[in-house]
Image (tube, rainbow, N blue to C red; front, side, top):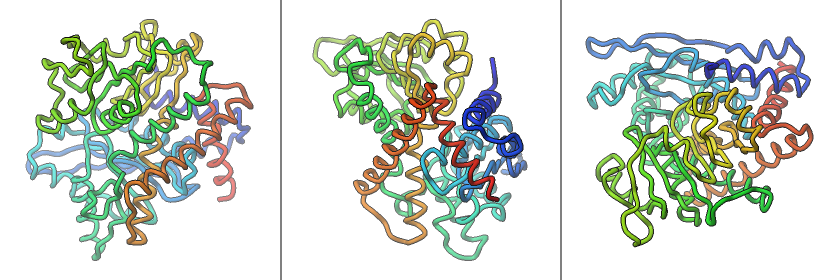
Length: 417
């Protein structure tokens, strides 16, 4: 099975071929501009950390910081590259970057987590900033961590600088709507896709049945939006396992329990109807293989691969995680007529929301959530339309079309440097 990094490189090469990007330009775009590799001391422990700045041809570096025990440099390089293409596809004046710390954040005390967050900033503060590289949250990080990082950066530069990070709490200069931006963006892209496909898409159920792997910030928010808009969410999962209810899950009830307990309590049922308990517990792997209309992987990469491709039954896969489908599996699925809406397009709402937070922090003017979501909606509709045009022009997959559009913008800017 190809690695996430290898998959990303292949996609870039194919997009460059279609977009007729010169070889010397492609070579520049495949290599990160800078790799920062360092260790962070927290008490007696040392943690490996990275910040990869991939490309800034279109503007300052932009990308999240993840805290995860399986993080490694190849993954961070792939994610930094993906951010370059994602920001380009979204039409933003940004390049791409990514950061990570190899750590199980859940094993740290609150004090250790704060020290780790501040230590990360102390290690790279001269390489980041509101006009250079603006980090954001990612897997394992949140608004509290961004608040600590913003505070530490501000101490180091000698003044309060809220525009140095995005994903902050609203109280510390964050944007209303930022927490839901990624899930909201995924819903917008799915809405536009279904409008485009209309009666041409074979949907087994009415309303469409959806399974969502991952019930963190992204998965839970898109689940709520789908539920509110009449979709039947029949399966959800977190790292502990999955829950299935054939009549549909009452997502607000699950969210209420999760807010109180921190988990999906699988022994309980959350059926929408009152026809009795129809729920069952099962695994994340089994969730991927359910006979649903729409499958939404919203957790980690490479979960759809050669080992389970033949058992994937969904007609549409909306990638809310980064890199959940390996290239070999995608070829097989697309060959069977499965529509895969790629991560670079589907989860772009997060970085669009980050862009609007950055603007608000720079100007010290703050908008209401409705205004922010309206702007995200408009930006994503434009991105979808440009991808659709390229897909039709070259008769290529959604993913390849997305990378071709992104590649065109970056390559044009890179040739002028």
